[in-house]
Image (cartoon, rainbow, N blue to C red; front, side):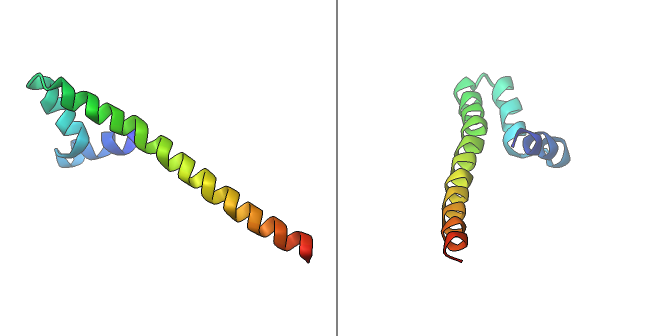
Length: 68
């Protein structure tokens, strides 16, 4: 996630990285911390969603293999 932000920032001059830089220049610390929280929270959420999906898939295929 952080790699994507760093890649899009110089390539487009827009996005979350650019917004954080503009927030620092205008003393918008609430916006900066909101971006940091988003950058930290979204990957954690995605990780847990994938973990739940993985558990569901493994449970289904484990039952199918046991009955075969």
